Length: 492
Image 1 (cartoon, rainbow, N blue to C red):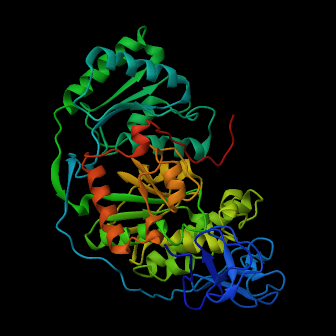
Image 2 (cartoon, rainbow, N blue to C red):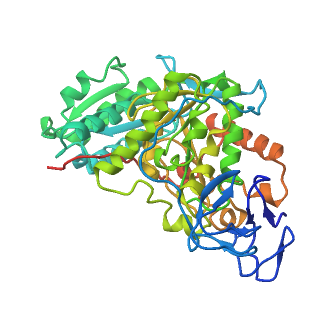
């Protein structure tokens, strides 16, 4: 096992991979104090005002003189970032690692040309008031028909759809419509109350083309026996979708979301680079990955902008970044008020530190598209999408865009899952062992001695198995399925 890592030869800090004690040595440097695991130590004297370099880039500046061997963290480092900045189109395309593969995945081909990795029956609620009824309908349906020949029957509670105005109401409707059209479900019952702002008739009228044998509507205030009527409609949908079968398809049908949460100082060393290697592998095979968390691109956005496939995508990326900064300013919040307390405890010092680790999930491929919140994927390859850093909102947004699965790296651990399989990739072996019921893959093994190539092949095997239905993600096993829709306005 390695004890420490210097990520880039020009870095003036090293990251320790285990707790180090005062007096121990890192790269010939004697430590002047204890250094927690995944935290940084100065490899040279850093004067007050000088940049701290990690990943080959500044992650902030020293707020006091830092001696060689001292702990480098929030007590002596501050961000260099400040407000909205201007950007220039300066394309630079690094080498993309990966190879062409003849691997196949066993998935469900949908009539609209999309592919699902699950064949689930969903109740999509237009309003939060119907959550209890939705679950009762499901319970009654499962008791009567025991639907073991599909991948499950689920509803997704949320508090939205009523007392919303303008953009928030429209966002809620669009996200729920995206769920209705998601390829992981073979059929949907859209359940409404009847008096909410998010009216079922407008929802249906703006849904676009849909298969009426697979998507049905029920307004509870219009029927006397809502459980019986809901059960009957679920049975009608089930009788259609139960005959769907998996077919072998190339890797190009996969659309995978990339997310991190509860990050630590190991995130940018193990799990995030592993996702980057996987993203490059998938895009080389004409598949699609989608990177969100715009506030966690701040400080590393120029690396993504340089990889825009053309000037149009560059300009869309600039808008993606600056629009989110304006969102912060419009609410009188500090643009760079990040990282979180958990991130800091895990060894992340500034937003640049977090962002330079975060964007590694996108690998080195060209950025082929930029997706607005609520829109769906249009381009194969690496895409950027407008989401906040919030775990539930970001995963919901990624899935609503059409991702069949989300890969979620974490150094602190988190149990939740979205409405699609949400695979947790641990950054360190200790947490992976402690929370093995949450974690799907341990990227910490990379610093324990497993080679990058071996880890990547094992990771690809796992993703293909989950996509093909041979395995479930931990959130599916635990039945943790949640949604949260972005909100920016007034609640009546």
